[in-house]
Length: 164
Image (cartoon, rainbow, N blue to C red; front, side):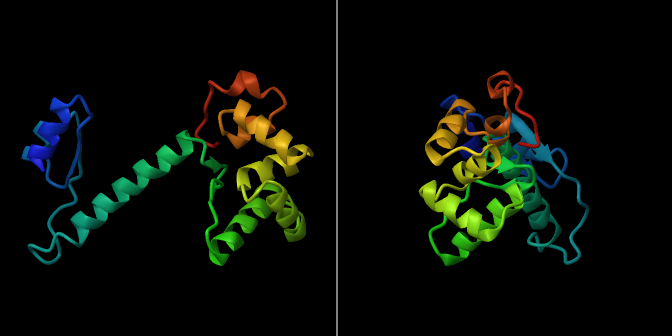
Protein backbone atom coordinates (compact mmCIF):
# COMPACT_ATOMS: atom_id res chain seq x y z
CA UNK A 1 0.00 0.00 0.00
CA UNK A 2 2.71 2.48 0.97
CA UNK A 3 4.76 1.60 -2.11
CA UNK A 4 1.73 2.25 -4.31
CA UNK A 5 1.13 5.65 -2.71
CA UNK A 6 4.80 6.61 -3.09
CA UNK A 7 4.78 5.49 -6.72
CA UNK A 8 1.60 7.46 -7.45
CA UNK A 9 3.08 10.60 -5.94
CA UNK A 10 6.31 10.10 -7.93
CA UNK A 11 4.19 10.03 -11.10
CA UNK A 12 2.45 13.25 -10.07
CA UNK A 13 -0.86 11.59 -9.21
CA UNK A 14 -2.79 12.45 -6.09
CA UNK A 15 -2.32 9.88 -3.34
CA UNK A 16 -5.19 9.34 -0.91
CA UNK A 17 -5.25 6.95 2.02
CA UNK A 18 -8.01 5.71 4.30
CA UNK A 19 -7.04 4.37 7.71
CA UNK A 20 -8.99 3.43 10.80
CA UNK A 21 -6.12 4.23 13.15
CA UNK A 22 -5.20 7.86 13.83
CA UNK A 23 -1.57 8.56 12.97
CA UNK A 24 -1.27 5.48 10.75
CA UNK A 25 1.99 5.07 8.82
CA UNK A 26 0.11 4.99 5.52
CA UNK A 27 -1.23 8.50 6.18
CA UNK A 28 2.26 9.98 6.06
CA UNK A 29 2.65 8.79 2.46
CA UNK A 30 -0.57 10.36 1.17
CA UNK A 31 -1.42 13.81 -0.09
CA UNK A 32 -4.84 13.41 1.50
CA UNK A 33 -5.15 11.17 4.53
CA UNK A 34 -8.60 10.18 5.73
CA UNK A 35 -8.45 8.77 9.23
CA UNK A 36 -11.40 7.39 11.16
CA UNK A 37 -11.09 6.45 14.81
CA UNK A 38 -13.85 3.89 15.08
CA UNK A 39 -12.45 2.16 18.14
CA UNK A 40 -11.59 -1.49 18.62
CA UNK A 41 -13.36 -4.25 16.73
CA UNK A 42 -15.95 -6.32 18.56
CA UNK A 43 -13.84 -9.35 17.64
CA UNK A 44 -10.19 -8.43 18.01
CA UNK A 45 -8.36 -8.87 14.72
CA UNK A 46 -11.49 -8.93 12.57
CA UNK A 47 -11.08 -5.85 10.38
CA UNK A 48 -14.11 -6.71 8.26
CA UNK A 49 -16.47 -5.37 10.90
CA UNK A 50 -16.18 -1.74 12.03
CA UNK A 51 -13.02 -0.88 10.08
CA UNK A 52 -14.24 -2.42 6.84
CA UNK A 53 -17.68 -0.87 7.18
CA UNK A 54 -16.19 2.56 7.94
CA UNK A 55 -13.97 2.41 4.88
CA UNK A 56 -16.85 1.31 2.67
CA UNK A 57 -19.00 4.20 3.91
CA UNK A 58 -16.18 6.66 3.22
CA UNK A 59 -15.80 5.33 -0.33
CA UNK A 60 -19.60 5.53 -0.81
CA UNK A 61 -19.57 9.19 0.27
CA UNK A 62 -16.69 10.01 -2.07
CA UNK A 63 -18.29 8.27 -5.05
CA UNK A 64 -21.70 9.84 -4.37
CA UNK A 65 -20.21 13.34 -4.17
CA UNK A 66 -18.31 12.64 -7.38
CA UNK A 67 -21.48 11.56 -9.21
CA UNK A 68 -23.25 14.75 -8.08
CA UNK A 69 -20.33 16.93 -9.21
CA UNK A 70 -20.25 15.18 -12.59
CA UNK A 71 -23.94 15.86 -13.22
CA UNK A 72 -25.02 12.23 -12.89
CA UNK A 73 -27.69 13.13 -10.31
CA UNK A 74 -30.81 15.29 -10.40
CA UNK A 75 -32.19 16.05 -6.96
CA UNK A 76 -31.83 12.79 -5.08
CA UNK A 77 -32.03 10.65 -8.23
CA UNK A 78 -29.13 9.01 -10.04
CA UNK A 79 -30.34 9.92 -13.54
CA UNK A 80 -27.43 8.81 -15.70
CA UNK A 81 -28.51 5.17 -15.72
CA UNK A 82 -27.58 3.03 -18.74
CA UNK A 83 -30.12 0.22 -18.91
CA UNK A 84 -28.55 -3.00 -20.16
CA UNK A 85 -31.28 -5.34 -18.92
CA UNK A 86 -34.97 -5.33 -17.94
CA UNK A 87 -34.27 -4.50 -14.30
CA UNK A 88 -32.28 -1.40 -15.25
CA UNK A 89 -34.86 -0.43 -17.88
CA UNK A 90 -37.54 -0.52 -15.19
CA UNK A 91 -35.30 1.57 -12.93
CA UNK A 92 -34.70 4.14 -15.69
CA UNK A 93 -38.44 4.49 -16.29
CA UNK A 94 -39.13 4.88 -12.56
CA UNK A 95 -36.43 7.56 -12.35
CA UNK A 96 -37.99 9.46 -15.26
CA UNK A 97 -41.44 9.24 -13.63
CA UNK A 98 -40.04 10.39 -10.28
CA UNK A 99 -38.05 13.26 -11.81
CA UNK A 100 -40.88 14.60 -13.96
CA UNK A 101 -44.13 13.51 -12.33
CA UNK A 102 -45.32 12.04 -15.63
CA UNK A 103 -47.03 8.68 -16.08
CA UNK A 104 -45.14 5.55 -17.09
CA UNK A 105 -46.40 5.60 -20.70
CA UNK A 106 -45.10 9.16 -21.17
CA UNK A 107 -41.79 8.17 -19.58
CA UNK A 108 -41.45 5.16 -21.90
CA UNK A 109 -42.25 7.20 -25.02
CA UNK A 110 -39.78 9.94 -24.10
CA UNK A 111 -37.13 7.36 -23.19
CA UNK A 112 -37.54 5.65 -26.56
CA UNK A 113 -37.42 8.97 -28.42
CA UNK A 114 -34.24 9.80 -26.48
CA UNK A 115 -32.63 6.56 -27.68
CA UNK A 116 -32.53 5.12 -24.17
CA UNK A 117 -30.97 8.17 -22.50
CA UNK A 118 -32.81 8.94 -19.26
CA UNK A 119 -31.35 12.43 -18.80
CA UNK A 120 -32.47 13.46 -22.29
CA UNK A 121 -35.96 12.07 -21.65
CA UNK A 122 -36.21 14.00 -18.37
CA UNK A 123 -35.16 17.27 -19.99
CA UNK A 124 -37.58 16.70 -22.90
CA UNK A 125 -40.52 16.09 -20.57
CA UNK A 126 -39.75 18.92 -18.16
CA UNK A 127 -39.18 21.50 -20.90
CA UNK A 128 -41.71 20.24 -23.46
CA UNK A 129 -39.16 19.89 -26.26
CA UNK A 130 -38.25 16.99 -28.55
CA UNK A 131 -35.32 14.67 -27.85
CA UNK A 132 -32.79 16.37 -30.18
CA UNK A 133 -33.51 19.75 -28.57
CA UNK A 134 -33.31 18.22 -25.09
CA UNK A 135 -29.97 16.61 -25.99
CA UNK A 136 -28.67 19.99 -27.22
CA UNK A 137 -29.82 21.65 -23.99
CA UNK A 138 -28.02 18.97 -21.97
CA UNK A 139 -24.86 19.48 -23.99
CA UNK A 140 -25.03 23.25 -23.46
CA UNK A 141 -25.54 22.62 -19.73
CA UNK A 142 -22.49 20.31 -19.63
CA UNK A 143 -24.71 17.30 -18.85
CA UNK A 144 -26.44 18.81 -15.82
CA UNK A 145 -30.21 18.21 -15.95
CA UNK A 146 -30.94 21.03 -13.49
CA UNK A 147 -29.16 23.56 -15.69
CA UNK A 148 -30.71 22.16 -18.87
CA UNK A 149 -34.25 22.66 -17.54
CA UNK A 150 -33.55 26.15 -16.17
CA UNK A 151 -34.56 28.87 -18.67
CA UNK A 152 -31.24 30.72 -18.40
CA UNK A 153 -29.03 27.65 -18.03
CA UNK A 154 -25.93 29.32 -19.45
CA UNK A 155 -25.57 31.61 -16.42
CA UNK A 156 -25.80 28.64 -14.05
CA UNK A 157 -23.22 26.36 -15.66
CA UNK A 158 -20.38 27.55 -13.48
CA UNK A 159 -22.49 27.45 -10.31
CA UNK A 160 -22.72 23.71 -9.81
CA UNK A 161 -24.79 23.04 -6.74
CA UNK A 162 -24.85 19.90 -4.67
CA UNK A 163 -28.47 19.20 -5.53
CA UNK A 164 -27.85 18.70 -9.23
